[in-house]
Image (cartoon, rainbow, N blue to C red; front, side):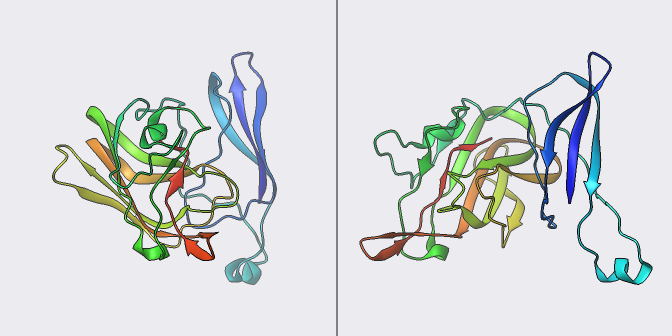
Length: 220
């Protein structure tokens, strides 16, 4: 499907802020970003629909359908938050602290393992006080999808001891370098947010062996 995202700006005119071409829609939440802008309204203008499913073929009709449309502000409640990542590879500029520095440029990576499903790299973010948390964004290291989780759990806590799993995701589609939003069904009050990769999608060959890490620019 192809479409434009447009906003009604302060000059009283519709302005295109993002154009999406031939997007392969899945059942997962899709995130489309653009530079922050002051606006009163937002709309999606579809100019190309996708392929027909069996129901559409039977009726001879094709539709553009959504279950939910959410609009996010650029405010990142995790920026500057304390990060605990016991398996972080603190090497040269790579550090767990890069996950919440608000910048895309210097990354975090865990230590490597030889099995994609043996990854042990929990990341816990302390927001400092209870906040309303509606989801987590992950910024992969690059478009190759190397060392990006194909399965993960996200859990939250108010005391840092007792955690409740909010999302347990399998077969996460490769983001091809794009930000991925993992949205909760509803906002939850929490101080601690834990991201636990349980499987890495694509590894990297090193000394004739495949190795797997968890790597990202930012968690917010």
